[in-house]
Length: 149
Length: 119
Image (cartoon, rainbow over all chains, first blue to last red; front, top):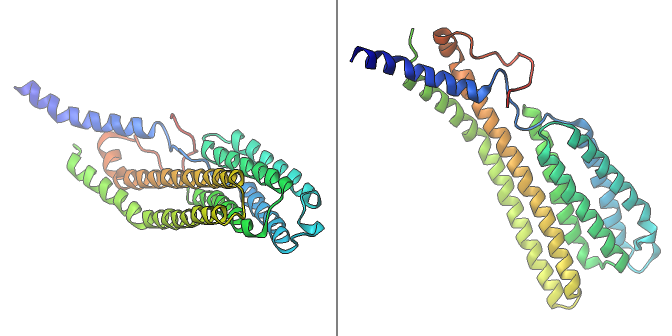
């Protein structure tokens, strides 16, 4: 009886201490990585260049300024930018979420390029614009949220 | 000195709830706003297809494009939720740090300690 009282009194404390220790380990734990200024700047610049291309396709329909050939350099640079950001992201521990988001963005840049080669009408531009803006906003929102940590 | 488990758990829950109450609505608003935008875009794709302005193949390409974009948004929400959980855990642990340290010794280290983790 006395042993039961002793065990029940201290076991709760022991269990609580073990749970807390297991939760926090030996120090502060981060499931999401820290803010990366390069990601913030890189995505912001890419968004600007993407909008420039969308605007030109929309405005100069039927003219050279709307063709794929005119904007070939954008696609090359966009792919390089996203790949560079992906390498940084993969090098940072526990940054799987941002890496996956960059994969999605690269897939869409490639799809946009493919469609552009075939020809894009002005009425389609808002679809690309909206999709891209959602992706850029998602990437930047998450990056800014990491600043809280 | 023994730990009052009820007191500890109550303080932790209050601290964690506070974080969610303050910050979850922002994430929720973001999610709802994006859902509306994506719904509108899928309707627009259908309109363009029905009017003949785009082919069936191009319509499918647009849908795939929007799906990739939507996945990105979901990943952002997942990330923001994880950050929120971490903030809630930190707040909860900070709320009871003194109680536990006094009772059982220094299990908790302060937030100024070097970053890292056993997990």
